[in-house]
Structure formats: structure tokens, C-alpha cells
Image 1 (cartoon, one colour):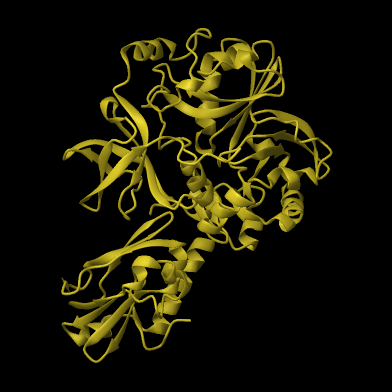
Image 2 (cartoon, one colour; image 1 turned 60 degrees about the horizontal axis):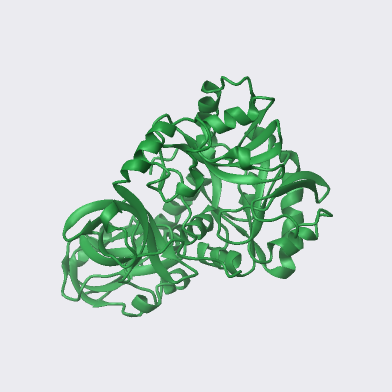
Length: 132
Length: 369
């Protein structure tokens, strides 16, 4: 379910590192919690973001959800497809519906994030809370 | 979110059915309720084009009986219940002495001495206490929520599928009328009412039959595309239909004149709670009014967002979001009386950004006759 080569945040973002570039998205758990996504707002290319800073907004029919940047960096690319097809975030959150690509300020920051196994048990715990 | 532990929430008789169907559950007015099953967009669309089944057993029921029943109902509500014939239902407001809303409700006239009220889930106990406190007419009152389950069958295919489960002829039951009869062998109050802007029915029956009733309705509706729907779609449907929701468009600070519900306010009927202030406000005119707007940009207005005009804050969005059938982003808001004309441009403040919107006629959606 959760790709082993991604790292994850408690706010349900993922990041995949490839050289100096990090690709960022939201997790399957996040898209499921949100429900039908109808609008995605992303930053401009060139925006410099700190870790934990808001990088955009994902809106479902019923809720607005702020997306936080997992690590520091500069936006090099945004996923233009999502402007006209926000529902892709429900269908392929770990793949074609990535949000932004960042030029990482400090690659080692990624190490502090959860790996797939840790994230898997983190969301399993969350599910237990809501079905208690 | 400050959600009380799930275990403390109230549950309808269909709670385990919703869980089994994999519904996403939320706390709504102290009840653990399904917000969506297959997704709000699909459920919304099903109700507009086919049919949807909603468990709305969290809604409260209050029964008023005896020779003083009509006098009590008349005294606490703003619409004219004396106009009702047996078997007719009426949308009304439960009023404070200031002429603001304690709640909005449906009043069903079962007989000259028996009225059946359907009220909002989160307000049931408050409403009952309020009615009790003003019962100087010797009416018998019962806080009867626990004795009823309520299911809403809504959409253009609702009548046909419900008819397969009952011998009561449904076609002669006009909009806002009701009948008694067996559905799936269970005695029900069958009302042609709803909160979606579509044709449909709301049925009330003893909770012990809930699971059988639910399953029989799902089976009867399979061939016409009926799907289970949650409170998420219920909210987008009522917003698109321009209907008020307690705690959003109406509450104990708003009056029927301000909220566009003047048609349920009849100060000429007799003395009732809030009549004086309501007459005075009618004479003076309201300072603010509820309007509908659509966004002229792709951004979405949400509950609580600020409304401005010419750079000055003039009001707040009471409900806002996407209108899935109209494929627009819409909302309702209170604005000063001089800004309410259809076509007026206003701005909605979305995450610090001023976004253009236009006042439009309510309701946003009207079903084809």
C-alpha cells in the first residue's frame, strides 16, 4: 500500500527523493479521509518553502485541508494536471497525482521522517481510534 | 477536532448496518452518523437523477396531544398550524420570545388533538424543554425520539420504488401531506417531505424494524439505482436547494424575515412567542438578509468566510461549498439589506484573498416539474 521508497509525515504527506529533487504528495489515507477532491491550490515555481510551511490546499466536497511541506526546498515544478482533474488525487495519490517537486535545501532532513513501516502502523493506530 | 470518544455518541438502530457498509462516520449533533458511503459526489448525483436512501433517525420527534394541542403548537411556532388539515405537514419555526429561532421543524397534523413534530437532532431536548415551559394549555407532550426511526427516500425514482413495498397509494399523497400505512409490513407514517430539493418520502416507524426496512428498501431500489447516502450529500443537496440549516442560516439570533423564511411567519394568526418583535421588525424592515451567491472564480467559499463589498466586511458565509449537480461553487450569507439585489457583486475572502462572487436567486436548484 505505502511505497517503501517514500518517507511520510504525521500530516499524511509523502516525499520521494531522487538526487537533489523531492517529489511531494498526499497519502492514500489522506485522500480517503478527505473524500472526493474538487480543488487543488499549489504554489508558484520558485517559491522557497521551509519544513512545516504550507505548500498549498486540497479541498474536498466537505473540507479544506492545508498541505505542509515535509522538508525545506525550492519549488521546481507543480503538477498542472491537478488544476483540471483534481479527482486524480483520489485515484492515484502515490503516483500521477503528486503535488510539487522541490529542489531540496538539505537532503538529510528527509531521514527524520517516517518510513513506510512506521507510517503504516501510525495510520493503523488512527483507524483503531475512530472505530473504537 | 474536538470529537468526544465514539463510545459516548448516540447511535441509531442502523449503526451496525452503516459500519458493515463501510460508511465513513462523523459526530453530528452528538450522534455517530454516516457522512458518506460511496462518496458525496456519487450520492448527490444519485438523488438528483435516481434515488438515495438516508438514515435520519437522529432527527427528533415530539408529540403534542389533547384538547390544548393546537393552542400549544400555535403559541410556540410562527407558521399557522390552524390552517392544516388532517394528514397535512407544515414547515415552521419554533420561536424565542424575541422572534428568533429555537429550531426549525415540521408540524404534522394527525388529528384535531394530535400533532407530530419533527425537529433537529441536536435541538431535540432543548426544543422539548422550551415547549414544556410554555405549555399553559394543558396539552400532553412527549419527547418521543426513542420511539421512531426515520428513513428518507429521495429522488425522482423514490415514489416508484417505495410503492413496491406498500399498498398505500403514494401518488395521491401530495407534497407536504402524509398517510399512515404498512411499508414492508411495518406500520409507518409516510410523509411526502424531504430536505434535498427532490421528490421523495420520509417514513417514521418503530426502531426495532430498522434493519429489515433498510434492507427491503435497498432491494426494492436496486433496479432503479438507489444507493445509501450520508449526511455529506444531505448537506450539499439541501444547500443546492437553498434550504436553511439550523446553526448555519438560522439560530437564536436570526428571525424569519431575515432568513428568507417570511413565508412561514404568520403574525396575523394569533398571539405567539416572538410575535411583537416580529411585527415590529416587519414594520421597520430588516437590516440584513440571507442571500445566495455563486463564485465567479474557481475558489470555494466555506462556512464562516468573510463577505466584503468595496473592501469593507459586510457579512459572513453561513454555508458554502461546491454544488455538485450545478457544477458551481455556491454559498449563502447574510449581507446588509441594501446589497441583496440579484446580480450584485460581492467578494468572499478565501485564505486572505478577495474572490469575486455574484448574488443569485434562491434556490440555486429547482427540480424540473
